[in-house]
Image (cartoon, rainbow, N blue to C red; front, side, top):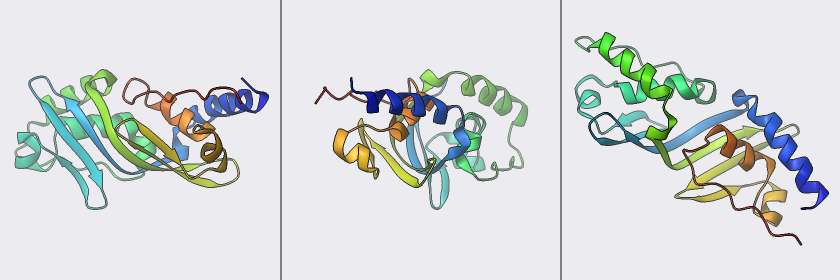
Length: 165
């Protein structure tokens, strides 16, 4: 491992200590609820979940748990509770789910990452990472993608460490 990579690893650890550097623009997550798998998406038009609760109320424990877990990285107000929603049960589930990252598997995301000098776009699509950073372009890994891997540990496929030059 070369010295530049050692510096990138340390910078990634430092970046991961400040999740507010990240702003998710969009993502798709496979979410394991208590009874079924659901697809939860966030995009320009807002949230969507394939669960029956979302179809009825426009809010559900799956989205509520993601709002709790990734609030600093969402940069948006939480969806308000809906009339008729079983708020107590949904809040309890959301609190439980937010503490169980193994329920969440990122299929894809696009996020803006505020680095020390510039902003970068980090994307992930079914295990394939990308960043518009020159270091990533030359090495296939950078401090921004490594920081995202730390922040999303267990919810994304790990980056492959480059072989020495």
